[in-house]
Amino acid sequence: MYKELDASMITRDALLILKGHNVTAWRQNNHATRGRMNNVKKGVSDIIGYNNSTGVAVFVEVKKIGDKLSREQKDLLTHAARSGCIVMIATQGDGFYTELIDYMEYIK
Image (tube, rainbow, N blue to C red):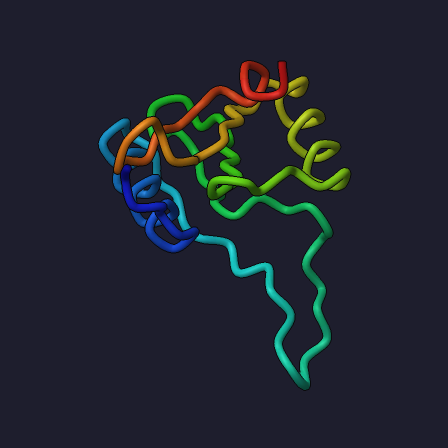
């Protein structure tokens, strides 16, 4: 049995994979902070970026084993995909590695 990857490990790996595919991307901090008003849109992706060659926006939602997309995440990702953005899910593959899956394949 393989060790289960946590969200921070999947995020780190996904950022490296994206960098290797000519994508500038960053982790989007979308957690509430005590004492600060949270102005982040509900459902915003964990990783946001753009393809350096085409300028096309990239949205990646990180999901560890057992996690599910919220209604807000599905709405944002579906709208982004239909608008021509690159939309993916970063998750643990069949072993101890991270894989990026096309969003439209993931929701089938």
